[in-house]
Amino acid sequence: MTDREANAILDALAQYVHILRESAAATSRAEDRATYQSRLAGAAEMFECVRVRKSREELGTLIKREQHAFGWGYLSQEPGARAGAAFAALVRALQGASHAT
Image 1: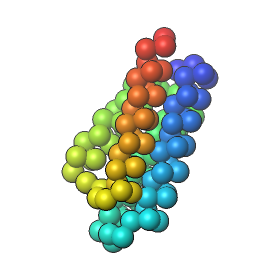
Image 2: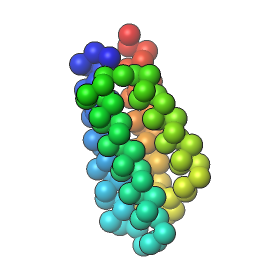
Image 3: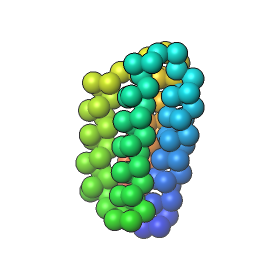
Image 4: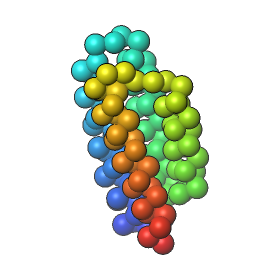
């Protein structure tokens, strides 16, 4: 993974984390808070994968795990929709980086 690719992914990842934090604070559903914390932990793993290991393959595995988790851990209301949209943008950034090489 080139530095340029990593930076594009990290920008999308930072936006995803930002929205997860905002959404966790804004949700009125206590049962969603644990899911937000789990997604934030997953984002930390993604960050480490990009910044330290620079492994597109491992990042892809983490992304797939999060995609599966989003199917099981539905986040409700507007905060959940924003988190889902930010995750979709992160996936597009990873795909864009993959096609840039």
